Image (tube, rainbow, N blue to C red; front, side):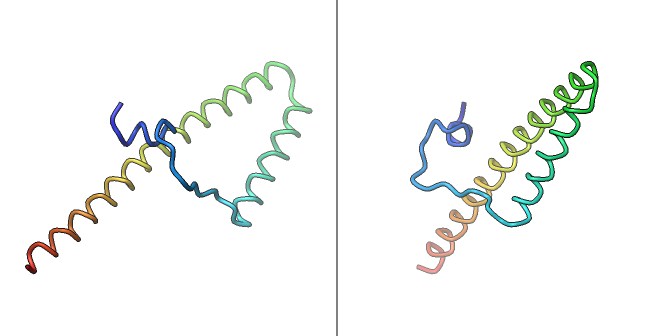
Length: 92
């Protein structure tokens, strides 16, 4: 793994970590939890199995998307820092 992946997967510990705590996020997660619970109660066993497979696959997609977005954001941040240093060098 490269540095960015190591950092993303928690192998490099950050001193502070942000957590999404907006009202919109909280409301959306509450809706997801409520609907999932309702479906688990009302679906037949084969349908519950399909639901669980869907949830697992969706979580994988979210994880992969998060990793890709983290790498892009990190790379853009590094590029911004390089550009800032380059401006300082050009001015001297």
